[in-house]
Image (cartoon, rainbow, N blue to C red; front, side, top):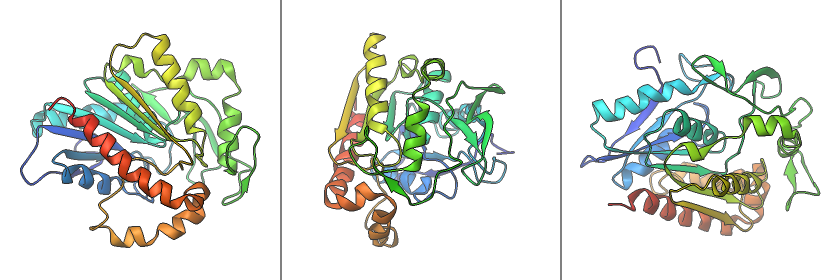
Length: 298
């Protein structure tokens, strides 16, 4: 962070590339590390640069007031140091917030890919993931980006419940996010605006996302793009019985240890565990959709 203005992990194809994807997953200690996704893009001949949001040396230890500004040197690094002409940005889960914020504030991305996204930034939290900070999860030029507050203080880890607006059993976090959307004034002020990105947009979600209402967010983003008369290509993919775990996955042959953990992942993500076969198929379908989307103009 001190030397380059951002913390990242780079994976390059053996034969080089004039295309790159900035990958935004979340924390440095994520269950699915960003470097594994950067390597997966490199398998397809696309340079991958994973940018960490928190938990690395020089970064906040929690998702709170993360500067979107750090994507400026990340883009500059790819353009000036690596001579990349075509840059896309890929955000998954919380990373989707920063992918679209980078696209709308910084621009210059050919493709914006949002997987299991939200349509609003949220209030920041401390490392315990329950204590709210009263500040935004994201900043731009030192100022908080408008946000919506979700109350995690009473969320119990691993506890699932039924909710009338959900198609599956959901976590307490899902309920907290869902309740946050009921504040229409704050939502209106905080809504992400991918129509300002000038990028081709791919939106992917599962209709039984157990972590937060991703399908609802995708529909909101799609509706807003249509209302704005957005002129670039937009594609929406909603998977039936689809989990929060979605999108690209690390290389299966190289990450055998990770794939052996799949049954345990099913205990954490109930939809994924209940419909594991379908969701494993969605990984393959999403990977093809994402790579084809990026390569479309080759």
